[in-house]
Length: 269
Image (cartoon, rainbow, N blue to C red):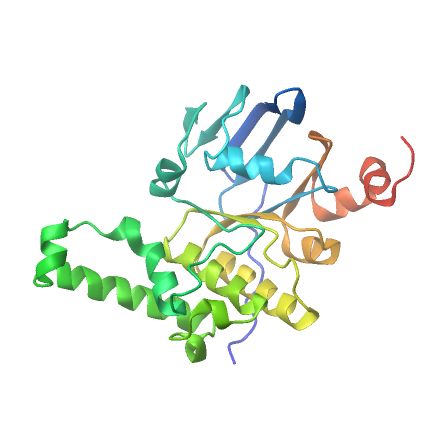
């Protein structure tokens, strides 16, 4: 077994922001999902976004990857400020995403599902792909090698050819993580990656998330309800309640924040 990897000081105040959210507001009709929220995600860190149900966490991820378009504010990614982004453009620029509910091709194998994460790495046209020769073949071999490395990384060799619809929920979540990692993202958005898992499955997922951050150098934004997981994994935490930011800081700082305690324990404001 590999020796534990020491925690790198990746979330120091001197780290440059990979992404900055500036005064974002999002509403659906008269319902305000996010109101004037600002925070940043530093390169190389695990940044947790937490809050009670309905706090606007998933809506925020949807704004970051372009699925939603906020009515106010802007997002700066890799130094480029933008007000609107399409999901396919976000993916092409290195933003990958997993979802609360597993979004896999249930009839396809683990291997083939993870291969779909390499779609943006395909440079050769349909003609080259059709003749399956030369540069196209070399490209396919390269993508296959990359996927096999991810399968090995996530320790799912035994299920590589099994249709994902036949796998347990925890393994499906792991396959979805593998598909996202196959994109070789600079920023990985994880929306409740441990929802519905038992203790053993959570421990495995925590290990893979840490390894993706430490070994692969992937910057991660994480939504998670398990406060123990959040405190153990994250470098910094931003807390939302009813679409507004109520706290932002290290896990220790957030844990002591009275507004956060009230939000999670139901103490009257």
